[in-house]
Amino acid sequence: MSNHDQLHRYLFEKFAVRGELVNLSHTYQQILANHNYPQPVQALLGELLVATSLLTATLKFAGNITVQIQGDGPLKLAVINGNNQQEMRGVARVVDEIAADSTLRQMVGNGIMVITITPEKGERYQGIVSLEGETLAESLEGYFRQSEQLPTRLFIRTGIHEGKPAASGMLLQVLPAELRHDDEFDHLVQLTATIKNEELFSLPANDVLYRLYHQEEVTLYQPQPVIFRCSCSRQRCGETLMTLPAEEVQTMLAQDGHIDMHCDYCGQHYLFDALDISALYAHGNPSAH
Image (cartoon, rainbow, N blue to C red):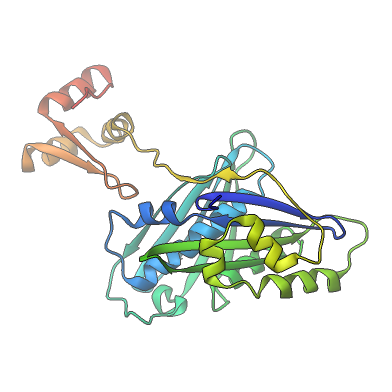
């Protein structure tokens, strides 16, 4: 069975270490579908998507995680949002030319990574990490050192598989335990680091784990599907219009005879004409169009 667009959790029986493996190439392709991003931006969004899926899987409650990179370089923003149901979406904002060989630092400039965790019940948490590492994975590992203080390693791979964009990754994390042996974790990290892109993109999860850890005892749990899902709707767009001053809405309407609300995440357009706007003000409920 293919492991595309599935998240797998696994556990080492003899070590206090848990793992995750995700392949979400189809979801990645849907995020890229409505945009013409430069290749380095595509790769970064793939890395962010893998990282967010892996982080969302660490949640022990219903809620969502947003991982975003902000900077003063030609890439102003790159953001992925995911929830505990593994419903993912993402977008990037490019404001200047980005060369095909641009590094993370060259794209973002002076940048930060903001991780926002929003439980359905409870307090919202936000962590801010400077982009000091050369890669996204290094910066995320710094976040774990600061916030969770549990040794964590991420292995994030993006590329082209069978002619289409592909993104996969793995996470290893030490479990909270009274006794911890760092050399055991290092051993598992070294094994995991040998995984090849092609293996992650194409092999079922049990084959990947066997290739990496065939001398260890590993329990692989039932997978969780990962999907692209945007939360935009005509109703939400109408509610957003109603937060604007009436004069501004009428000015926008006069320009083209309608207002085109465009979703950056999925590319959907919602059109509101004069009758729709009148209905919004009368009932607060955008009519179907």
